[in-house]
Image (cartoon, rainbow, N blue to C red; front, side):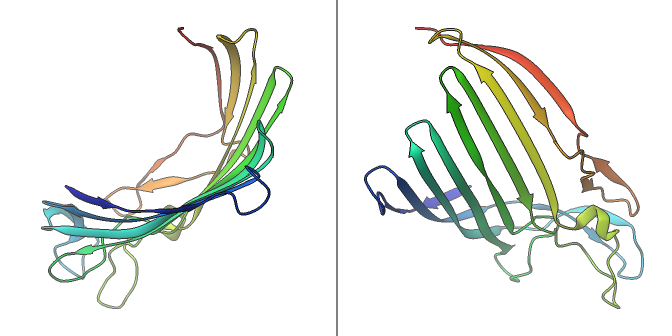
Length: 198
């Protein structure tokens, strides 16, 4: 893999330390990409095959607005184009758009972080008539939200509870066999303790 990062940042745009914006373009090259593609355009059976080299280009952006040093809203995301270096065919199953945003609130020793993720639709193989081999519910846009609450007992000890998939939304990762998909986690709860070694 070859990675060529670059970036531009402007901060602050508003009053000092209130608004922070960063933009990072990127270009990457990969060898020996594995794709699941139909060997027969009339058959729904997908087969793993080495698809050669791939170029990925895109941009990352991050925007944060600080109400004060510990309370802020944020939005960040990525847009990318991944394609075969020889044929310019777009990479299958890989979304081109990723976006998330949320808010972090801190009241004395209590910290609350709520984040919403969005993953764009996946490009999937199609038949000769342009129909998808896979159900749209497995390949369309998906959303995922998480909330985390923590309490600082001291500067080093912070118990927390996290709830993943707040809305218990059904999201899937498509498999190469038509009609089959791997379900992502339903609503999940995590309880833990962070300890910072000094």
